Each structure stands twice: as structure tokens, then as C-alpha cells.
Image 1 (cartoon, rainbow, N blue to C red):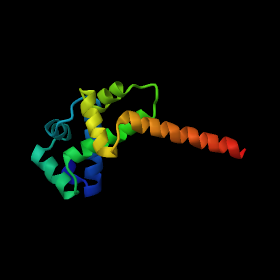
Image 2: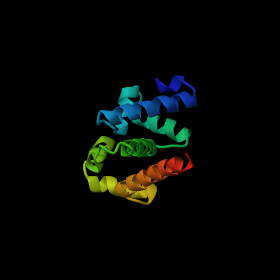
Image 3: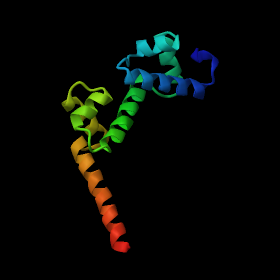
Image 4: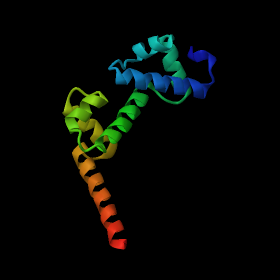
Length: 126
């Protein structure tokens, strides 16, 4: 299926399949390859030709999803960890610190402070 498309279309198709698989809890390279009806080796080769790997795409998806969910203050950090695919909140915390240099809670607090500060600055100018 992916061999007949150009390189950019291949990558977009693969990334979409990985995101869909991650949402359903099936995010192994073998499962995604089966969904795309290619061998795992062909999938790896296509990714390599596009300068990426399966793990990098999965990690980027988890990071983007984590950032989006952390904006929703009604969700707890442990709920976000599970939604992003971590069974242990501490593993999510370690991954998040690797991405940002801070804990998810601290990142959320800083963001909240920035938003409140921006609102206060707008009110003072009015």
C-alpha cells in the first residue's frame, strides 16, 4: 500500500496509522505494518528513507498530545499519563522532563501563570 505513493504521502499515511494505533492502544511497529499491509522491514525502510523512525513518530505524538491535554486543567496528570499511553505516572513524568526539563505539573503551573499574567496585563492596559 505505501510503496505506490510518493515519499511525503507515505510518511503522512504512516504517521496517521501510528496516531490511530496509539489511540486504540496498539502501537507496535508490527501492528502498524500489518494495518498498512506491508512488512515491518518495509515500514522501517520507508521511515528511514524519510529521516525518521517509528519510535520518534510515537514519541512526537505522545509529546504533542501531552501538551494539548495539559492545557485542560480539569484533567489530572495521572489521567493524562494514561491517555498518552503510559501505565505509570512516574514514567510519564520522566519522559516529560526529558522533553521540557520540567515536570508536567510545573509546566502546567508555568503556563497557567503566563496566561494569568497576560490577562492581567491586558486588563491594566484597558
